[in-house]
Amino acid sequence: MDAIFKALADPSRRKLLDRLDARGGQTLRELGEGLGMSRQAVSKHLAVLEAALLVTAVRRGREKLHYLDPVPVQEVADRWIGRYERHRLGALSHFRQTLEGTAMDKPEFVYVIYIRTTAEKLYRALTDPEFIEVYMGGHGPDSTWEVGAPVRWKMSPDGEFEEVGQRVLVAEPGKRLSYTWHTLQPMHREMFGFASDEAWEKAVRERSKVTFDIEPAEVAEMGVKLTITHDGFDSPDSKMLEGVSGGWIMILSSLKTLLEGGKFLDGQDPGAA
Image (cartoon, rainbow, N blue to C red; front, side, top):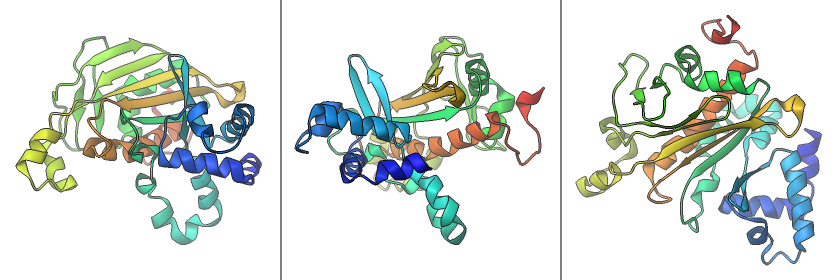
């Protein structure tokens, strides 16, 4: 936690975090505009924030896009304050994600997490039904995980797997997995408060996709780096975007616990066999 406090101690770095809180996916040039700092100074500050895991960077072509990661701050709060106000601080889904920036032309959810495991085991966890059953709480996908194969989805723990139009786009074991996402389902209409038939009909036409990129962590002791990108949303106000932004954080937290040897409600680790 020393790295977190060191990173937050500098007002310039806090200002960079504020900018990323307002709009994620900014380049080095965009972040430095109007701050009165040289490009080199901004780069050094970002390096400190990345080392503290407060900022994550994702390469898109020639650009390097930066995103705020609120989890380290949440962990600090949980350590000293959580037992008093856990019901409030635990609600990461209500954290103002980087997705809320109105200036985003292509709204997306991007999240990076480091897991002390191997790339092979992580890929297995993303595709093996026994793993998925644990960290997704009985929900989640089922597929043969071959390109073009359908991805059936279970919407509730006591439900059945359904064909909802999802397909595998990329399947590279140990490296990358991508598939199209289901549209809003009938149960979501009341959940998200769609009163207008017109608004609902427009919302259910939205088709997004999710991509998991696996690569070695910059520091070997940290295991592997998992970057999840959920994109293809029609607007920053997308209800599906609102739902997945909080949901993925909780799911990936459970996945990390599973792979790093945590204890589970059923007392079993599917990867132990």
